[in-house]
Image (cartoon, rainbow, N blue to C red; front, top):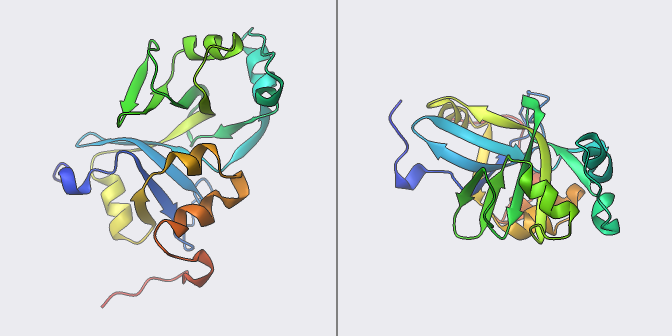
Length: 190
């Protein structure tokens, strides 16, 4: 499949799972697309908290997190690929060792230095930590969209960082002016 052009580049967009999504990893999911190119796409599920909080994660990697409000924040299931690897979606962008910039203000970091800064109270002001990510090969995401598996909308950081987890899907659908309760689980083709 041809490389995505500027009009179809989904970097910094949300993928919203359609009601007919059969894959248990993605049914009801909101996925933030951090990278989309001719090589494929990388995204993070932003509405699947795990039974692991930041305090516990930091203890596992020998860091002490003493910022009480942050300690109870959930770690999210970012997707089914490399579920033993952590990713930090954050704002502001910052200057960490392994950061991909997404637009002018968001960063996706996979190096431990961002978590070390968070432990010291010097990290980004807004963050979402995941284990794993969602990945698509060349043309795979475009094919899934063509088969009505996903709707897309430009991402808004407030949905990621400020919206309660249980409301993220409906809020993201709301960016399109859609109430997900009115969506059909079967697609029609003219």
